[in-house]
Length: 449
Ligand SMILES: NC(=O)c1ccc[n+]([C@@H]2O[C@H](COP(=O)([O-])OP(=O)(O)OC[C@H]3O[C@@H](n4cnc5c(N)ncnc54)[C@H](O)[C@@H]3O)[C@@H](O)[C@H]2O)c1
Image (cartoon, rainbow, N blue to C red; front, side):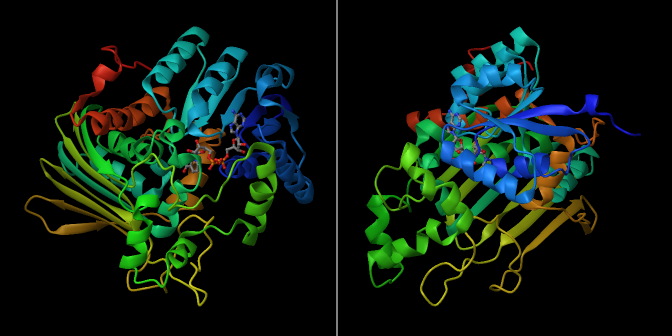
């Protein structure tokens, strides 16, 4: 069927930093030209908009109209925006979501939905008042291996889930990136329990179709940060603390796109993309554990580290009829070049490195039912970043796939709120040393949408 121009959805985007490129490429690049067009964009840093404009012109794409962030409402009205994509830092999401909804647009907001409970409430209220839709982009749901695990559980192959064990290891390259800029400030990112683990908590909520009810968390800043710099130099037997710094340094000038996007525009707003990870000023944890009880009766034990020598995750889910285990190696090793610096591209998503080190890039899903041999479950190939998740996510977001498929991968406000509720409760638990009832965060009123 030929789709007419009248059916095209009109998109705006706010926050033209690193993550925005996925959406800009897909919309302005023409991949979804039959369904959607990017008509306007906005960023508080005019230099980053310039950079994306140059990129669009060079690629022969039409250039969206630019608006200052304080004129978001005018942008939505003048450009007749149907949906606004929000790819700004986490602490800015809530205000922008609420403003966009009231201005008449639906919202696609990058994870995490927001970073604290009062702002969850504000978003919920705006949805109630406007009747508009908010989608939270949980791209990990779409990665074929994670979808395969969901299918195993939904099909009842391991029975009713009783226990989940989930370990996520970020390597020294990817993990360090959370300590270079706004992520390292808990007031801006909610810390890794909210910023990063909301992906993982969402996966568990979705895999086992349950809601978190109680959280106990423990963790600390134990590797990065100024207080650990000297210890790193000793334990790495490096010749100097400077050599250790170098191994973790991000060379913005050495990457043309990172230079054009961040380094060349730092003078506009003072935004440093490459702060030293052993400098003072870090208020987030780099090692975290959590115990989470679910309304289904299951319990999750979870851990996150940010300085593993390899990157990937392991999850085992035990049920009344068996057990499923998923093991994923996203990068087997971070290696140093002759100059003592890391050799892989720091801006790239962790990818295949089968030739690097003894642990090949791999994924394996095994299901074992009681009284049966273990069986390997085939995982279809994915496309693109985040374990193949990003490409499928875009297809759903831009309505190429419109059926509400049985896996239920599209996540709305309620799923976004539920995912961060674990991290927000975890942050309270970290501060108080006590277990926290999730319902208490919501002041006794469950989030309903
Ligand atoms: N789903 C994923 O896997 C994934 C991956 C990366 C980032 N993200 C999320 O995407 C979002 C953006 O991350 P990023 O790495 O691109 O950050 P970034 O810092 O590179 O980009 C953010 C952009 O927003 C702009 N900005 C800041 N405050 C603003 C405001 N009030 N109004 C308008 N513009 C503003 C900045 O100038 C910058 O250009 C974050 O919420 C992050 O958690 C998600």
